[in-house]
Image 1 (cartoon, rainbow, N blue to C red):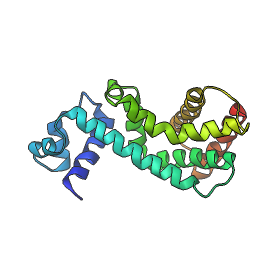
Image 2: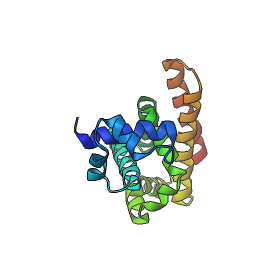
Image 3: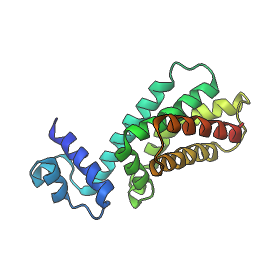
Amino acid sequence: MDKKRKLLDAALKLFVEYGFHGTPTSMIAKEAGVANGTLFHYFTTKDELIIALYVDIKTRMSTYIFESAKEQKTFKNILKEQFLASLYWAQDNKLEFLFVEQFKTSPFLSLIAPLEIEESLKPYFDMLHRGMKDKIIKSHPVGLLFTLISSHTYGINQYLITSNFSKAKQHQVISDSFEMLWSMIT
């Protein structure tokens, strides 16, 4: 594993455990097994490391979600597969999902350019626009629909994290929660 990846993995673990401000760069370097100066070779500031980690996770998560749904033909099936994929990804990548939640409620989110955020959300917004245009889902501001869907996803993930369900029960909760979401937006 390369040093940059080791630093990102160490930062992920420590940021989730100790928070952004409770994790000094020296602790990250030590956890990664590299010199403190090596961290600054890849990331000039801790803020830059935090943002790079967020972008890395969001890119991997989005790729997984879109790949999971690419074979689907109907709007409902595409949305369902994306919803299911996001929750299954979260279950398989708990630290990453917890980091994303932590990041979204931190001041670091404001350090990402609005245009970059808009660009990352464009595929989701385009899909929702098509669903409204084709009269499959209710016509509402696309930002509101996206917020309802993403909030539902994060909430269900939190519910699953705090519950000690069997895999079968987790699958049932995820499937049922999509149907609740679908009823809400159609």
